[in-house]
Image (cartoon, rainbow, N blue to C red):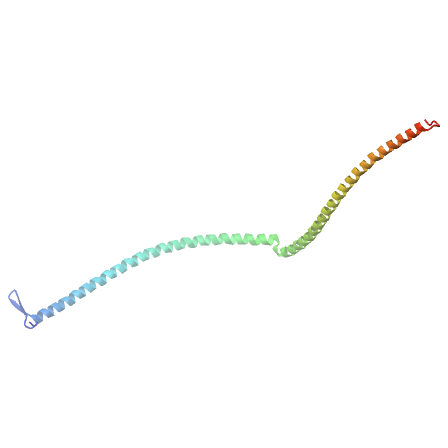
Length: 177
């Protein structure tokens, strides 16, 4: 069965298959065009809404930017005052002469280090002298104890000598005492 042989009766009118194909083709083309136009207008509407929303956000951002700009200007003015105060403090503190003072301080520190080295040497010598004095004191005490022992022995010897002389005097026929 071919399209030319097809025939449809609608309300007493006979329509050939070729005309049906032409009407369906035109109908589908018009329907496709309407659908495409509908999609285009829907996208256009979405884009319009997005533009409105973006414009509202942009307005909010502009207002926020202005607030930030004012805050930044206020902070910058405060920083300018702080910098001015710092510059004044630096000039008052005479920072330009600080290098000379630091050099003088370095020289003083070197002298202190030399003096400290001398003091450490003196401390070591004093410690050595204290050690020698302690050793000498121990020797002197030992000698004093030895002398005490000799003194006791000499007193005993003297007493023995006195006893010997007393005995000799007692034995003396010439009568010594």
